[in-house]
Length: 573
Image 1 (cartoon, rainbow, N blue to C red):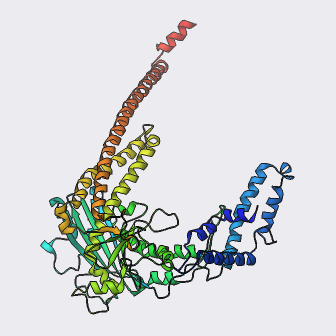
Image 2 (image 1 turned 90 degrees about the vertical axis):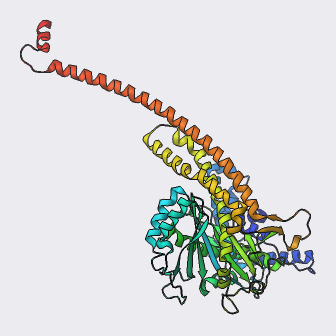
Image 3 (image 1 turned 90 degrees about the horizontal axis):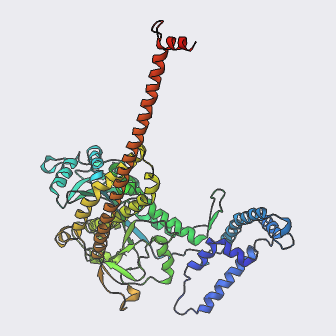
Protein backbone atom coordinates (compact mmCIF):
# COMPACT_ATOMS: atom_id res chain seq x y z
CA UNK A 1 0.00 0.00 0.00
CA UNK A 2 1.64 3.20 -1.17
CA UNK A 3 1.58 6.69 0.28
CA UNK A 4 -0.82 7.75 -2.44
CA UNK A 5 -3.32 4.98 -1.68
CA UNK A 6 -3.13 5.80 2.02
CA UNK A 7 -4.10 9.41 1.39
CA UNK A 8 -7.01 8.33 -0.79
CA UNK A 9 -8.24 5.97 1.90
CA UNK A 10 -8.12 8.85 4.36
CA UNK A 11 -11.31 10.19 2.84
CA UNK A 12 -12.18 13.11 5.06
CA UNK A 13 -8.64 14.53 5.21
CA UNK A 14 -8.09 14.51 1.47
CA UNK A 15 -11.57 15.87 0.79
CA UNK A 16 -11.05 18.60 3.31
CA UNK A 17 -7.85 19.85 1.66
CA UNK A 18 -9.32 19.77 -1.84
CA UNK A 19 -12.63 21.36 -0.88
CA UNK A 20 -11.27 24.47 0.88
CA UNK A 21 -10.60 27.37 -1.48
CA UNK A 22 -7.10 28.79 -0.90
CA UNK A 23 -6.90 32.51 -0.29
CA UNK A 24 -5.40 34.19 -3.30
CA UNK A 25 -5.04 37.85 -4.11
CA UNK A 26 -5.22 39.36 -7.59
CA UNK A 27 -1.41 39.74 -7.74
CA UNK A 28 -0.61 36.26 -6.47
CA UNK A 29 0.54 33.80 -9.11
CA UNK A 30 -1.07 30.35 -9.20
CA UNK A 31 2.29 28.61 -9.32
CA UNK A 32 3.35 30.35 -6.10
CA UNK A 33 0.19 29.12 -4.38
CA UNK A 34 0.79 25.55 -5.53
CA UNK A 35 4.43 25.75 -4.50
CA UNK A 36 3.49 26.99 -1.03
CA UNK A 37 0.95 24.22 -0.68
CA UNK A 38 3.54 21.64 -1.73
CA UNK A 39 6.04 22.98 0.82
CA UNK A 40 3.47 22.75 3.62
CA UNK A 41 2.56 19.18 2.68
CA UNK A 42 6.21 18.17 2.54
CA UNK A 43 6.82 19.73 5.95
CA UNK A 44 3.89 17.83 7.45
CA UNK A 45 5.09 14.59 5.82
CA UNK A 46 8.49 15.11 7.43
CA UNK A 47 6.92 15.58 10.85
CA UNK A 48 4.57 12.62 10.46
CA UNK A 49 5.98 10.15 7.91
CA UNK A 50 3.75 7.85 5.89
CA UNK A 51 2.03 4.98 7.64
CA UNK A 52 4.03 1.77 7.49
CA UNK A 53 7.43 3.50 7.29
CA UNK A 54 8.06 3.66 11.06
CA UNK A 55 7.32 1.52 14.12
CA UNK A 56 4.47 3.46 15.68
CA UNK A 57 1.73 1.32 17.15
CA UNK A 58 -0.53 1.71 14.10
CA UNK A 59 2.35 0.91 11.75
CA UNK A 60 2.49 -2.67 13.07
CA UNK A 61 -0.94 -3.87 11.76
CA UNK A 62 -0.32 -1.94 8.54
CA UNK A 63 3.05 -3.63 7.97
CA UNK A 64 1.66 -7.05 8.87
CA UNK A 65 -1.26 -6.62 6.45
CA UNK A 66 1.08 -5.56 3.65
CA UNK A 67 3.31 -8.57 4.41
CA UNK A 68 0.31 -10.95 4.21
CA UNK A 69 -0.88 -9.39 0.94
CA UNK A 70 2.38 -9.97 -0.88
CA UNK A 71 2.15 -12.30 -3.87
CA UNK A 72 4.33 -14.98 -2.26
CA UNK A 73 2.30 -15.23 0.94
CA UNK A 74 -1.26 -14.82 -0.33
CA UNK A 75 -1.61 -18.54 -1.01
CA UNK A 76 -0.78 -19.30 2.64
CA UNK A 77 -3.21 -16.71 4.08
CA UNK A 78 -6.91 -17.50 3.49
CA UNK A 79 -8.90 -14.71 1.88
CA UNK A 80 -11.27 -14.29 4.92
CA UNK A 81 -8.19 -13.53 7.03
CA UNK A 82 -6.91 -11.03 4.47
CA UNK A 83 -10.34 -9.36 4.42
CA UNK A 84 -10.27 -8.86 8.20
CA UNK A 85 -6.73 -7.51 7.94
CA UNK A 86 -7.94 -4.96 5.39
CA UNK A 87 -10.66 -3.89 7.79
CA UNK A 88 -8.08 -3.55 10.55
CA UNK A 89 -5.93 -1.34 8.30
CA UNK A 90 -8.91 0.88 7.48
CA UNK A 91 -9.58 1.17 11.19
CA UNK A 92 -6.05 2.33 12.12
CA UNK A 93 -5.48 4.73 9.18
CA UNK A 94 -7.55 7.52 10.86
CA UNK A 95 -5.08 7.53 13.77
CA UNK A 96 -2.34 8.43 11.29
CA UNK A 97 -4.57 11.08 9.70
CA UNK A 98 -5.26 12.56 13.12
CA UNK A 99 -1.53 12.78 13.87
CA UNK A 100 -0.95 14.63 10.59
CA UNK A 101 -3.90 16.96 11.23
CA UNK A 102 -2.42 17.94 14.59
CA UNK A 103 1.00 18.49 13.01
CA UNK A 104 -0.36 20.86 10.36
CA UNK A 105 0.82 24.46 11.00
CA UNK A 106 -1.76 26.91 12.28
CA UNK A 107 -0.96 29.30 9.42
CA UNK A 108 -1.83 26.71 6.77
CA UNK A 109 -4.74 28.31 4.85
CA UNK A 110 -6.01 24.98 3.50
CA UNK A 111 -6.40 23.02 6.73
CA UNK A 112 -7.36 25.91 9.04
CA UNK A 113 -10.27 28.33 9.15
CA UNK A 114 -8.91 31.88 9.21
CA UNK A 115 -11.54 34.49 10.03
CA UNK A 116 -10.45 38.10 9.48
CA UNK A 117 -9.95 39.75 12.86
CA UNK A 118 -11.78 42.93 11.84
CA UNK A 119 -14.92 41.01 10.87
CA UNK A 120 -17.40 40.51 13.69
CA UNK A 121 -21.02 39.34 13.66
CA UNK A 122 -23.96 39.98 15.96
CA UNK A 123 -27.23 38.09 15.94
CA UNK A 124 -30.40 39.90 16.91
CA UNK A 125 -33.27 37.43 16.91
CA UNK A 126 -34.74 34.09 15.87
CA UNK A 127 -38.18 33.34 14.43
CA UNK A 128 -39.74 29.87 14.73
CA UNK A 129 -42.97 28.89 12.94
CA UNK A 130 -45.43 26.10 13.75
CA UNK A 131 -48.48 24.85 11.79
CA UNK A 132 -51.75 23.63 13.31
CA UNK A 133 -53.99 21.95 10.71
CA UNK A 134 -57.35 20.42 11.76
CA UNK A 135 -55.72 17.23 13.11
CA UNK A 136 -53.56 19.35 15.47
CA UNK A 137 -56.20 21.85 16.61
CA UNK A 138 -57.05 20.01 19.84
CA UNK A 139 -53.37 20.13 20.84
CA UNK A 140 -53.30 23.87 20.11
CA UNK A 141 -56.40 24.51 22.21
CA UNK A 142 -55.02 22.56 25.17
CA UNK A 143 -51.68 24.38 24.93
CA UNK A 144 -53.27 27.84 24.79
CA UNK A 145 -55.42 27.13 27.84
CA UNK A 146 -52.50 25.67 29.82
CA UNK A 147 -49.53 27.95 29.14
CA UNK A 148 -50.96 31.13 30.71
CA UNK A 149 -49.67 33.63 28.14
CA UNK A 150 -52.84 35.73 28.45
CA UNK A 151 -53.25 35.52 32.22
CA UNK A 152 -51.55 38.82 33.01
CA UNK A 153 -52.91 40.74 30.07
CA UNK A 154 -54.55 43.98 31.20
CA UNK A 155 -57.10 44.26 28.43
CA UNK A 156 -58.47 41.20 26.62
CA UNK A 157 -60.17 41.81 23.30
CA UNK A 158 -63.86 40.98 23.63
CA UNK A 159 -63.00 39.39 27.01
CA UNK A 160 -61.85 36.25 25.19
CA UNK A 161 -58.89 34.07 26.06
CA UNK A 162 -56.33 33.05 23.44
CA UNK A 163 -58.02 29.68 22.94
CA UNK A 164 -61.44 31.29 22.50
CA UNK A 165 -60.08 33.91 20.13
CA UNK A 166 -58.36 31.32 17.93
CA UNK A 167 -61.49 29.17 17.93
CA UNK A 168 -63.58 32.16 16.83
CA UNK A 169 -61.08 33.03 14.09
CA UNK A 170 -61.14 29.45 12.76
CA UNK A 171 -64.93 29.45 12.61
CA UNK A 172 -64.97 32.75 10.76
CA UNK A 173 -62.12 31.76 8.46
CA UNK A 174 -60.40 35.12 8.84
CA UNK A 175 -56.91 36.12 7.73
CA UNK A 176 -55.59 38.08 10.70
CA UNK A 177 -52.65 38.19 13.10
CA UNK A 178 -53.49 37.48 16.74
CA UNK A 179 -51.16 38.54 19.57
CA UNK A 180 -51.00 35.52 21.88
CA UNK A 181 -48.65 37.02 24.44
CA UNK A 182 -45.15 38.03 25.47
CA UNK A 183 -42.86 36.02 27.76
CA UNK A 184 -40.13 37.76 29.75
CA UNK A 185 -37.48 36.39 32.08
CA UNK A 186 -38.27 37.15 35.77
CA UNK A 187 -34.98 39.06 36.23
CA UNK A 188 -35.20 40.95 32.95
CA UNK A 189 -35.23 44.74 32.99
CA UNK A 190 -37.64 44.89 30.04
CA UNK A 191 -40.97 46.52 30.87
CA UNK A 192 -43.78 44.47 29.32
CA UNK A 193 -47.00 45.47 31.15
CA UNK A 194 -49.07 42.49 29.98
CA UNK A 195 -46.20 40.00 29.67
CA UNK A 196 -45.99 36.57 31.23
CA UNK A 197 -42.82 36.00 33.25
CA UNK A 198 -41.06 32.65 33.36
CA UNK A 199 -37.51 31.35 33.23
CA UNK A 200 -35.94 31.60 29.78
CA UNK A 201 -32.60 30.34 28.43
CA UNK A 202 -29.80 32.84 29.05
CA UNK A 203 -29.64 33.54 25.30
CA UNK A 204 -33.23 34.88 25.23
CA UNK A 205 -34.50 38.10 26.79
CA UNK A 206 -38.03 38.22 25.33
CA UNK A 207 -40.35 35.88 23.43
CA UNK A 208 -43.27 37.32 21.47
CA UNK A 209 -45.87 34.80 20.25
CA UNK A 210 -48.32 35.62 17.50
CA UNK A 211 -50.78 33.54 15.52
CA UNK A 212 -52.10 33.93 12.00
CA UNK A 213 -55.39 32.35 11.05
CA UNK A 214 -55.23 31.13 7.44
CA UNK A 215 -58.79 30.38 6.42
CA UNK A 216 -60.86 28.04 8.59
CA UNK A 217 -58.38 25.13 8.56
CA UNK A 218 -54.89 26.39 9.43
CA UNK A 219 -53.46 28.33 12.38
CA UNK A 220 -49.84 29.45 12.13
CA UNK A 221 -48.01 30.27 15.37
CA UNK A 222 -44.78 32.30 15.10
CA UNK A 223 -42.46 32.90 18.08
CA UNK A 224 -39.92 35.74 17.92
CA UNK A 225 -36.96 35.23 20.30
CA UNK A 226 -35.12 38.45 21.09
CA UNK A 227 -31.51 37.71 22.06
CA UNK A 228 -29.54 38.90 25.07
CA UNK A 229 -25.91 40.03 24.84
CA UNK A 230 -24.90 36.42 25.45
CA UNK A 231 -27.08 35.20 22.60
CA UNK A 232 -25.95 37.98 20.24
CA UNK A 233 -22.25 37.15 20.66
CA UNK A 234 -22.27 33.36 21.13
CA UNK A 235 -21.98 32.53 17.41
CA UNK A 236 -19.27 35.15 16.90
CA UNK A 237 -17.22 33.67 19.76
CA UNK A 238 -17.28 30.16 18.27
CA UNK A 239 -16.61 31.55 14.78
CA UNK A 240 -13.40 33.29 15.88
CA UNK A 241 -12.21 30.54 18.23
CA UNK A 242 -9.18 28.37 17.44
CA UNK A 243 -10.45 24.85 16.74
CA UNK A 244 -8.40 21.69 16.89
CA UNK A 245 -8.74 18.51 14.79
CA UNK A 246 -11.43 16.13 15.97
CA UNK A 247 -11.31 12.35 16.34
CA UNK A 248 -14.73 10.72 16.66
CA UNK A 249 -15.17 7.12 17.76
CA UNK A 250 -17.94 5.24 15.95
CA UNK A 251 -17.89 1.91 17.73
CA UNK A 252 -16.50 -0.91 15.62
CA UNK A 253 -16.73 1.26 12.49
CA UNK A 254 -13.87 3.34 11.12
CA UNK A 255 -13.30 6.47 13.26
CA UNK A 256 -13.99 9.87 11.74
CA UNK A 257 -11.24 12.51 11.54
CA UNK A 258 -11.70 16.18 10.63
CA UNK A 259 -8.94 18.73 10.26
CA UNK A 260 -9.09 22.18 11.87
CA UNK A 261 -10.99 23.70 8.95
CA UNK A 262 -13.83 21.20 8.98
CA UNK A 263 -13.83 21.02 12.77
CA UNK A 264 -14.31 24.80 12.83
CA UNK A 265 -17.04 24.57 10.18
CA UNK A 266 -18.94 21.92 12.12
CA UNK A 267 -18.51 23.68 15.48
CA UNK A 268 -19.71 27.01 14.07
CA UNK A 269 -22.75 25.53 12.38
CA UNK A 270 -23.51 23.47 15.49
CA UNK A 271 -23.52 26.69 17.53
CA UNK A 272 -25.93 28.35 15.11
CA UNK A 273 -28.07 25.23 15.13
CA UNK A 274 -27.96 25.17 18.94
CA UNK A 275 -29.62 28.59 19.07
CA UNK A 276 -32.21 27.44 16.56
CA UNK A 277 -32.90 24.28 18.55
CA UNK A 278 -33.29 26.29 21.76
CA UNK A 279 -36.14 28.18 20.14
CA UNK A 280 -37.60 25.04 18.60
CA UNK A 281 -37.49 23.20 21.92
CA UNK A 282 -39.03 26.10 23.82
CA UNK A 283 -41.96 26.34 21.41
CA UNK A 284 -42.39 22.55 21.17
CA UNK A 285 -42.62 22.19 24.95
CA UNK A 286 -45.40 24.80 25.13
CA UNK A 287 -47.17 24.68 21.78
CA UNK A 288 -46.20 21.65 19.67
CA UNK A 289 -47.84 21.21 16.27
CA UNK A 290 -47.16 19.57 12.92
CA UNK A 291 -43.50 20.56 12.48
CA UNK A 292 -42.58 19.40 15.99
CA UNK A 293 -43.14 15.80 14.83
CA UNK A 294 -40.84 16.09 11.79
CA UNK A 295 -37.15 15.21 11.62
CA UNK A 296 -35.82 18.72 10.91
CA UNK A 297 -38.20 20.50 13.28
CA UNK A 298 -39.88 23.86 12.79
CA UNK A 299 -38.77 26.35 10.11
CA UNK A 300 -36.41 29.02 11.46
CA UNK A 301 -35.21 32.45 10.33
CA UNK A 302 -32.40 34.26 12.16
CA UNK A 303 -31.09 37.83 11.87
CA UNK A 304 -27.34 38.56 11.65
CA UNK A 305 -25.31 41.75 11.10
CA UNK A 306 -21.69 41.87 9.88
CA UNK A 307 -19.22 44.54 10.96
CA UNK A 308 -17.45 45.15 7.60
CA UNK A 309 -18.87 42.80 4.97
CA UNK A 310 -21.94 43.95 3.00
CA UNK A 311 -23.59 40.90 1.37
CA UNK A 312 -25.81 43.09 -0.83
CA UNK A 313 -23.12 45.27 -2.42
CA UNK A 314 -19.91 43.26 -2.09
CA UNK A 315 -18.75 39.98 -3.51
CA UNK A 316 -17.35 37.81 -0.74
CA UNK A 317 -13.53 38.04 -0.87
CA UNK A 318 -11.43 34.88 -0.90
CA UNK A 319 -10.52 35.39 2.75
CA UNK A 320 -14.21 35.31 3.73
CA UNK A 321 -15.59 32.51 1.58
CA UNK A 322 -14.65 29.66 3.93
CA UNK A 323 -15.79 31.63 7.03
CA UNK A 324 -19.15 32.33 5.36
CA UNK A 325 -19.57 28.65 4.60
CA UNK A 326 -18.75 27.88 8.24
CA UNK A 327 -21.63 30.17 9.23
CA UNK A 328 -23.92 28.59 6.64
CA UNK A 329 -24.51 32.09 5.22
CA UNK A 330 -22.83 31.84 1.82
CA UNK A 331 -26.32 31.88 0.28
CA UNK A 332 -27.03 31.28 -3.39
CA UNK A 333 -23.76 31.41 -5.40
CA UNK A 334 -25.36 33.24 -8.36
CA UNK A 335 -28.06 35.52 -6.95
CA UNK A 336 -29.16 37.41 -3.87
CA UNK A 337 -32.65 37.89 -2.45
CA UNK A 338 -33.69 41.40 -1.43
CA UNK A 339 -36.83 42.92 0.07
CA UNK A 340 -37.81 46.60 0.23
CA UNK A 341 -39.33 45.84 3.64
CA UNK A 342 -35.83 45.21 5.07
CA UNK A 343 -33.44 47.72 3.42
CA UNK A 344 -29.79 46.81 3.49
CA UNK A 345 -30.30 43.06 4.13
CA UNK A 346 -30.37 39.93 2.00
CA UNK A 347 -32.14 36.62 2.57
CA UNK A 348 -29.58 33.81 2.69
CA UNK A 349 -30.87 30.23 2.31
CA UNK A 350 -28.98 27.34 3.85
CA UNK A 351 -27.47 24.95 1.32
CA UNK A 352 -28.91 21.55 2.32
CA UNK A 353 -27.27 19.60 -0.50
CA UNK A 354 -23.97 19.03 1.33
CA UNK A 355 -23.68 16.24 3.89
CA UNK A 356 -21.04 18.16 5.84
CA UNK A 357 -23.47 20.93 6.74
CA UNK A 358 -25.56 20.42 9.88
CA UNK A 359 -28.03 23.26 9.34
CA UNK A 360 -31.44 22.34 7.99
CA UNK A 361 -34.78 24.06 7.42
CA UNK A 362 -33.61 27.63 8.07
CA UNK A 363 -32.98 30.97 6.39
CA UNK A 364 -30.82 33.88 7.43
CA UNK A 365 -31.47 37.61 7.09
CA UNK A 366 -27.99 39.12 6.76
CA UNK A 367 -26.69 42.66 6.42
CA UNK A 368 -23.93 45.10 7.31
CA UNK A 369 -24.52 46.92 10.59
CA UNK A 370 -23.50 50.39 9.41
CA UNK A 371 -25.63 50.32 6.27
CA UNK A 372 -28.65 48.82 8.02
CA UNK A 373 -28.38 51.56 10.64
CA UNK A 374 -28.28 54.26 7.97
CA UNK A 375 -31.23 52.93 5.96
CA UNK A 376 -33.53 52.13 8.90
CA UNK A 377 -33.74 55.19 11.13
CA UNK A 378 -37.27 54.55 12.39
CA UNK A 379 -38.75 56.36 15.38
CA UNK A 380 -39.74 54.54 18.54
CA UNK A 381 -36.71 52.25 18.80
CA UNK A 382 -34.49 54.32 21.08
CA UNK A 383 -31.37 56.37 20.43
CA UNK A 384 -28.37 55.31 18.39
CA UNK A 385 -26.29 53.18 18.40
CA UNK A 386 -28.94 50.49 18.30
CA UNK A 387 -28.26 46.85 19.07
CA UNK A 388 -28.79 43.95 16.67
CA UNK A 389 -31.79 42.81 18.74
CA UNK A 390 -33.37 46.25 18.28
CA UNK A 391 -33.13 45.94 14.50
CA UNK A 392 -34.56 42.42 14.75
CA UNK A 393 -37.58 43.83 16.60
CA UNK A 394 -37.84 46.54 13.93
CA UNK A 395 -38.11 43.90 11.18
CA UNK A 396 -40.37 41.54 13.13
CA UNK A 397 -43.48 42.06 10.98
CA UNK A 398 -41.62 41.60 7.67
CA UNK A 399 -39.71 38.48 8.75
CA UNK A 400 -42.86 37.00 10.29
CA UNK A 401 -44.56 37.34 6.91
CA UNK A 402 -41.55 35.82 5.15
CA UNK A 403 -41.43 32.75 7.39
CA UNK A 404 -45.12 32.15 6.67
CA UNK A 405 -44.34 31.55 2.98
CA UNK A 406 -41.22 29.45 3.58
CA UNK A 407 -43.06 27.38 6.20
CA UNK A 408 -45.86 26.77 3.68
CA UNK A 409 -43.36 25.42 1.17
CA UNK A 410 -41.77 23.29 3.91
CA UNK A 411 -45.18 21.92 4.93
CA UNK A 412 -45.73 20.68 1.39
CA UNK A 413 -42.28 19.09 1.36
CA UNK A 414 -42.92 17.24 4.63
CA UNK A 415 -46.32 16.01 3.42
CA UNK A 416 -44.76 14.74 0.21
CA UNK A 417 -42.08 12.89 2.21
CA UNK A 418 -44.66 11.31 4.53
CA UNK A 419 -46.80 10.18 1.55
CA UNK A 420 -43.74 8.71 -0.13
CA UNK A 421 -42.89 6.72 3.01
CA UNK A 422 -46.50 5.56 3.33
CA UNK A 423 -46.61 4.37 -0.27
CA UNK A 424 -43.26 2.61 0.00
CA UNK A 425 -44.33 0.68 3.11
CA UNK A 426 -47.99 0.10 2.14
CA UNK A 427 -47.44 -3.38 0.68
CA UNK A 428 -45.65 -4.64 3.79
CA UNK A 429 -48.11 -3.06 6.24
CA UNK A 430 -51.35 -3.96 4.48
CA UNK A 431 -50.46 -7.23 2.74
CA UNK A 432 -52.31 -9.19 5.45
CA UNK A 433 -55.63 -8.33 7.04
CA UNK A 434 -55.40 -8.02 10.82
CA UNK A 435 -56.89 -5.83 13.51
CA UNK A 436 -53.50 -4.12 13.95
CA UNK A 437 -53.43 -3.40 10.21
CA UNK A 438 -56.86 -1.83 10.49
CA UNK A 439 -55.65 0.46 13.28
CA UNK A 440 -52.62 1.51 11.24
CA UNK A 441 -54.82 2.10 8.22
CA UNK A 442 -57.18 4.23 10.28
CA UNK A 443 -54.34 6.40 11.60
CA UNK A 444 -52.84 6.65 8.13
CA UNK A 445 -56.06 7.83 6.53
CA UNK A 446 -57.47 10.00 9.32
CA UNK A 447 -54.93 12.82 9.71
CA UNK A 448 -54.15 13.33 5.99
CA UNK A 449 -57.83 13.12 5.21
CA UNK A 450 -58.60 15.86 7.72
CA UNK A 451 -55.70 18.10 6.69
CA UNK A 452 -54.72 17.81 3.06
CA UNK A 453 -57.67 19.15 1.07
CA UNK A 454 -58.71 22.08 3.34
CA UNK A 455 -55.14 23.16 4.11
CA UNK A 456 -54.22 23.00 0.41
CA UNK A 457 -57.15 25.30 -0.36
CA UNK A 458 -56.47 27.80 2.42
CA UNK A 459 -52.68 27.83 2.25
CA UNK A 460 -52.62 28.47 -1.50
CA UNK A 461 -54.88 31.48 -0.90
CA UNK A 462 -52.02 33.16 1.01
CA UNK A 463 -50.39 33.85 -2.36
CA UNK A 464 -53.47 35.66 -3.70
CA UNK A 465 -52.87 39.35 -4.39
CA UNK A 466 -55.71 40.47 -2.12
CA UNK A 467 -54.06 38.80 0.88
CA UNK A 468 -50.46 39.69 0.01
CA UNK A 469 -51.21 43.37 0.44
CA UNK A 470 -52.14 42.72 4.09
CA UNK A 471 -49.84 39.89 5.25
CA UNK A 472 -47.41 39.51 2.35
CA UNK A 473 -43.81 40.54 1.70
CA UNK A 474 -41.99 41.19 -1.55
CA UNK A 475 -38.70 39.34 -2.00
CA UNK A 476 -36.87 39.74 -5.32
CA UNK A 477 -34.11 37.47 -6.57
CA UNK A 478 -31.46 39.13 -8.72
CA UNK A 479 -27.87 38.61 -9.80
CA UNK A 480 -25.32 38.89 -7.03
CA UNK A 481 -22.47 41.40 -6.97
CA UNK A 482 -20.17 39.03 -8.88
CA UNK A 483 -22.73 38.33 -11.64
CA UNK A 484 -24.31 41.72 -12.31
CA UNK A 485 -25.04 42.13 -15.99
CA UNK A 486 -25.08 38.39 -16.66
CA UNK A 487 -27.57 37.58 -19.40
CA UNK A 488 -28.69 34.30 -17.84
CA UNK A 489 -29.63 35.72 -14.44
CA UNK A 490 -32.72 37.94 -14.38
CA UNK A 491 -34.98 39.26 -11.66
CA UNK A 492 -37.84 37.18 -10.32
CA UNK A 493 -40.15 37.12 -7.31
CA UNK A 494 -39.12 34.52 -4.75
CA UNK A 495 -42.55 34.59 -3.09
CA UNK A 496 -44.39 34.08 -6.40
CA UNK A 497 -41.99 31.28 -7.28
CA UNK A 498 -42.73 29.57 -3.96
CA UNK A 499 -46.46 30.04 -4.61
CA UNK A 500 -46.30 28.36 -8.01
CA UNK A 501 -44.41 25.42 -6.57
CA UNK A 502 -46.84 25.09 -3.65
CA UNK A 503 -49.93 25.21 -5.88
CA UNK A 504 -48.64 22.66 -8.37
CA UNK A 505 -47.29 20.50 -5.54
CA UNK A 506 -50.62 20.43 -3.71
CA UNK A 507 -52.50 19.60 -6.92
CA UNK A 508 -50.25 16.61 -7.50
CA UNK A 509 -50.42 15.57 -3.86
CA UNK A 510 -54.24 15.73 -3.72
CA UNK A 511 -54.45 13.60 -6.87
CA UNK A 512 -51.94 11.08 -5.51
CA UNK A 513 -53.77 11.00 -2.19
CA UNK A 514 -57.09 10.22 -3.89
CA UNK A 515 -55.53 7.38 -5.89
CA UNK A 516 -53.73 6.06 -2.81
CA UNK A 517 -56.94 6.09 -0.76
CA UNK A 518 -58.82 4.25 -3.49
CA UNK A 519 -56.19 1.50 -3.47
CA UNK A 520 -56.21 1.22 0.33
CA UNK A 521 -60.00 1.18 0.53
CA UNK A 522 -60.16 -1.49 -2.18
CA UNK A 523 -57.58 -3.58 -0.34
CA UNK A 524 -59.46 -3.08 2.93
CA UNK A 525 -62.76 -4.12 1.31
CA UNK A 526 -61.25 -7.23 -0.26
CA UNK A 527 -59.51 -8.06 2.98
CA UNK A 528 -62.76 -7.65 4.89
CA UNK A 529 -64.53 -10.01 2.48
CA UNK A 530 -61.74 -12.57 2.74
CA UNK A 531 -61.72 -12.26 6.52
CA UNK A 532 -65.52 -12.71 6.65
CA UNK A 533 -65.26 -15.88 4.54
CA UNK A 534 -62.46 -17.20 6.76
CA UNK A 535 -64.42 -16.44 9.92
CA UNK A 536 -67.48 -18.17 8.42
CA UNK A 537 -65.48 -21.33 7.74
CA UNK A 538 -64.09 -21.30 11.23
CA UNK A 539 -67.58 -20.84 12.66
CA UNK A 540 -68.82 -23.85 10.62
CA UNK A 541 -66.05 -26.08 11.94
CA UNK A 542 -66.70 -24.88 15.48
CA UNK A 543 -70.38 -25.79 15.05
CA UNK A 544 -69.50 -29.27 13.77
CA UNK A 545 -67.11 -29.88 16.65
CA UNK A 546 -69.76 -28.66 19.10
CA UNK A 547 -72.30 -31.04 17.57
CA UNK A 548 -69.88 -33.97 17.89
CA UNK A 549 -69.12 -33.12 21.51
CA UNK A 550 -72.83 -32.86 22.29
CA UNK A 551 -73.53 -36.22 20.63
CA UNK A 552 -70.77 -37.95 22.59
CA UNK A 553 -71.97 -36.37 25.79
CA UNK A 554 -75.50 -37.53 25.07
CA UNK A 555 -74.25 -41.10 24.45
CA UNK A 556 -72.33 -41.26 27.71
CA UNK A 557 -74.90 -39.46 29.82
CA UNK A 558 -76.00 -41.65 32.83
CA UNK A 559 -79.81 -41.50 32.61
CA UNK A 560 -80.58 -44.98 33.99
CA UNK A 561 -80.26 -48.62 32.85
CA UNK A 562 -82.01 -47.99 29.54
CA UNK A 563 -79.55 -45.53 28.03
CA UNK A 564 -78.71 -45.73 24.40
CA UNK A 565 -75.11 -46.66 25.18
CA UNK A 566 -76.21 -49.52 27.54
CA UNK A 567 -78.61 -50.94 25.01
CA UNK A 568 -75.93 -50.67 22.30
CA UNK A 569 -73.40 -52.62 24.44
CA UNK A 570 -76.02 -55.29 25.20
CA UNK A 571 -76.80 -55.66 21.50
CA UNK A 572 -73.12 -56.07 20.69
CA UNK A 573 -72.74 -58.81 23.28
